Length: 472
Image 1 (cartoon, one colour):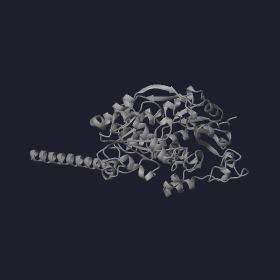
Image 2 (cartoon, rainbow, N blue to C red):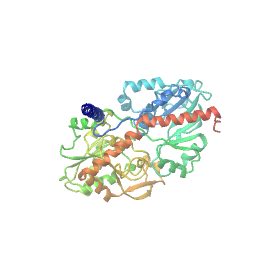
Image 3 (cartoon, rainbow, N blue to C red):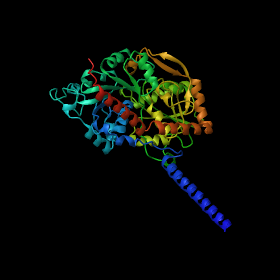
Image 4 (tube, one colour):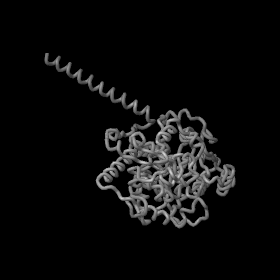
C-alpha cells in the first residue's frame, strides 16, 4: 500500500511539474508573439493613478508639439506620457512653426487630446497676445492671465522660451531643453539663471554642458521616450517587400537626418564611397529633408551623387534618397533596412537611433554626445572620434554652434563598422537584443512619464511647504 501510495504521489508531482512547465511555455510564447524576437514588456507605473496629490497639481506645458521636428516629437511624446495622470494639465503650442504634414498624420485621438488640454485665454501667459505666428491662439492682450494660475509651468524650448512673459503664470518655472555640444551658447545661460527655477535635459552629457557653461540653477536629467508602435517586428519584416529603390539582395544601410552639417553626411558618404562599389550588394537609404527649405530634393540628390563620384568615379555604390514620408510609413522604412548608421557630429538624444533599436537594427553611430546615454559597445557599434573640432562655418542653420565643439568621426573606423555589421551576425544579434532590452525597460512612455510625475510631486510638496517666490 505504501508503495502504491508513493507511486501515486510521484505521478501527481510529475503531472503538476509538467503542467507548470506547459503554463510557463504558453506565457512565454504569448510574450514573444507580441514583441518580436525578444521577450520585452512595458513596465507599468499604475501606482500614480492612486496618488491623490496628482489630482491637485496644476501644470501648463508649452511646447512645439505639432511642428514635426525632433524637438516637437520629443515634447509630444513627453506630453502623451503624462496626459492621463494629471486632471489639471493644460498644454499650448509654442516654438517651431507648424507642419501641415504633421497635423495630417495625427490620429483623431491625439487631435482630441490637444483640444481637451487647450487653455483658455485667461490661462495663457501674456506672451501669447503679442505673437501673430501662433495660429490656433487668438487672444487679446486684455484677456490673458494677470496672475499665477498654475503650480508649474513647463516651457519646452531653447533660450527664446525662457522669458518672464511666458513663465509668469506659474508659481514654479521649469525649462526643458536639449543641446548637441559639450557646452551651450552664452546667450542661453542668463535666461536660465534669471527666469527658470530648474532645467530639465535628457542626459548627463547635457547636465555637464550646461553646468560647465555657467548655469547655476538645478539641472535634472529626464530622458526622451518614444511612442513605440505595437507591431510585431519579426512579422513586419516578413511582410515588408518594398525596399525603397534598393535591390532585394542588398544589405541596406539606413540613415535618417536633417540636411545640415551637424549630421555628418560628408563623413558617411566618404566612408560608404570608399568602402563599397556597385559590385557590392549594398545600398545606402537616406531619409532627409531641409527644414529651411533652402535645398530641394533634386539638389540633395545631385550633391550626394557628386560626393560619391569623388571616391568612386566609376562603379559608384547604390544610394536612394527619400524625403518627408508619413509617420505611418516609418515602420516600413525600418523594416526594409538591415542596419542604421549616423556619422553625427553631435546629438542631444537622437530619437531615430532609439527607434532603429526598437526595430532590431544594429546601429552604427559616432561615440560622442547625448545618445551615449543608451548607446555603446554593448548596445551598438560606436564610431571612434578622431577629435573635437571648434565649429567656424557660415551656415545660417549652424550659427548656434559657432565657437562650440562638434565631433569629427573616424572614416576608417566607420568603414570597419559597416563591414562588421554585414559579416559578424553573432555579435550583431547579441548587441541588438541588449539594446532593445535597455530601451524597453528604461525609455518607454510609462517609465519616463513616471519620472516626470515624480518631479511634479516633488515640486508640489515644495510649494505646499514653502511657496516659491517669483523670479525677479
